[in-house]
Image (cartoon, rainbow, N blue to C red; front, side, top):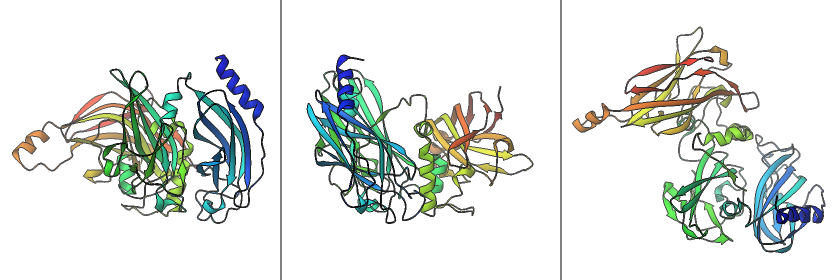
Amino acid sequence: MTRLIRTTILMVNVLLAAVMIAGQVEGQVLAERTFEAPSTAEVVLDLTASSPGAAWIAPGREAAALRILVDGAPNQDLLLYGGAEPFTYHLSLGQVAAGRHTLRIDFNPAQSATSLTMAKVGKVELRLVDRSQPDFTALSHAPVLYARPDTIGKFSDLPLLMYYETERQGELTIYRYTVIFSNEDGGTQTSGLMARWGRTTDIEWVSEVHLDPQGRVVREIYQGVNHETKDFQGRRQGAHPELLIASVNNNFSDQGTSGLRFALSPLPADLTKASREEVMDRHRWIYRVMAEEMIREKKITAQRTLGESIIDLRHYLYLDVKSTQRNGGVISFAVKLRNGSRWYTSNLGINSYKVERSGYFRTTIPLPVGTRPADIERLAARCDVGSNPRTRDEVLRATTAACELEAINKVFFLDGNFLPSSTVPVTFVRRSLAFGEVEEIGLGQQ
């Protein structure tokens, strides 16, 4: 640890002064801090807070809201989706200049659920990241998000976690920022989400910045509406691009604002050998928020159905897979239970629910209520042709379709609290499937 870093931490610790009370009126102060920045720095806030009586699953009690101010100016909003128990939120306060600064956290009844009248703040930890520290650049370019206007007051499609990946292209360094949302109100139907993506959260890349060896921005892009890649031309807070969540499937615009502003502190992630859903596995609480939002929005049913409603998320088998689909090949999976003859499939008999993309991905198989890992007798993978070939050229291409099944990283259920738990051991050998072929995957340890 350098002398500058030690001095920074010491100054923050010495100057922390707290006022901790429960807020019940507009502008009620829950906590105040004073901190000193020896030099220009990005400020990361780890805030532990709770909202008594709150439950993300319960209409009217979803979450209390906080307003966070820096040097007296509004900085961001926070919805306490963690509920009544203390939960730590990782936030970015942006860049500050050298000197003394103030942090204030207020209760915001106007944005809180209607039945909630207070919030509590516990531990407040500030970390100053200056230019000498390796994560300064990545933190300084993280996007700031404005809530989609039609979600305000509905506690829907909430940004839960931001992560970034680092890539080198020649002399350029690229930082790519991705957000995990609690759900998506539009786009793929819920049953399709579980089949094709293995989750009901929405994971969307937000922005990407390309830097030269001197740290200068060569290009900055973002994911526009309809998944269109666009050059960023909007406002900034320091180097942070400001983006509005602009579509029901959580794509973005570099124009416009809304009544809620979110600034999450991005976490580093290396997904070169893992699916994006691995980030959820490392932060298991996301599954609980995901499930509770589904229940609150009445998207869970006991009936066998397709579309917006699905069965309880605890009755799915989750599979994390790596596979390469070639020349129009698509892959799906199936399970047979002991003492039964029926096979349960990931794609539910729908061709468009099969997975056509290559790489690491997640899919699920809905199973009868009460199914346990020991009940699974057989697991199989199937390769098909994604299209309906009609012309001679289409038929010739379809005959070369294949699925290269390279890895099955994990197979698991969610437990009673909607957290990843019960695993199903598999004995996996890499294999290649031509179109129309089905191959069984061994169960149990080698």
